[in-house]
Image 1 (tube, one colour):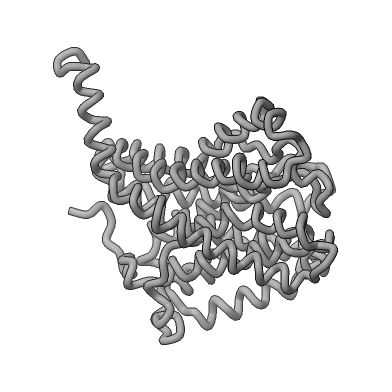
Image 2: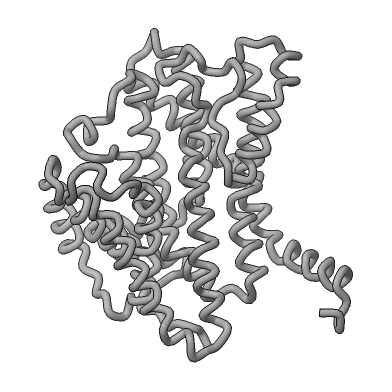
Length: 368
């Protein structure tokens, strides 16, 4: 029997997750265009918001990940299956992107000679760290040092480190609760408690005098992941109404430049994307079936923009550079999906079986 019964259609053909992630990843590129091409904040942050449009999109990404990854933990055959699924979703694509950045972008734009560049230890730590994604390295020797946004080759990778930690935390919670069927009755209450604690821990600093409760950064994106997990496990008690969700979210935006924007958005943004994900409106339904290229867009967008900035920022304006960034990035992301991500995801079961066989060979039955 399934661990949870769901009201919503979680099949790929029955929801809008792929399209929403594609839009969010593309908006991150638009948001990054301001600091990378003209050296300014994006309009939303310039207006007085405590975060930019790109960060708000990452928050929505975490809501979606909280729903989908927690569901993956609930439905996985085993802990090994969950770990393999998570690793193969992120690491092969990250490895190929890191190779491209280190030996494509890096060699093309470094001010060092080829020998000096390739023998610099930071090139190889860049490759390792940005494949494993747990200790991100942003710079390469002599690369983009004269850019408007100087130094960083891929400033988007920071969120993947946080996301992996959420995979570990929420996966651990779910699999601990799965040890005994009776414990599963309380999983949604455990996740709700975590959500409430994260909510109040995250919103307290803006409501208190500056510096009264620092730092809060570690709670921000983890909170949105927890919100997604709660929306999943409490979906039977949470009605969907897209019109209400849009109205509430728009109302929260009117509190910009006040201490209330952040607390309100933490409630309205997760609910908005919960409703959007399962909306059956004709416009959204007609956009289903697009390739799942959002991950590729996210990891390739920043270095593509930095490359265009290095080449053309003094000759072209932000709009044509942003359009070119989107076109090039979506092309690279599509290639990544078809040649790297999708084929490796199709081998998850084989990798899981190979690890199991190796484990049984190293630790024979009866010696555990």
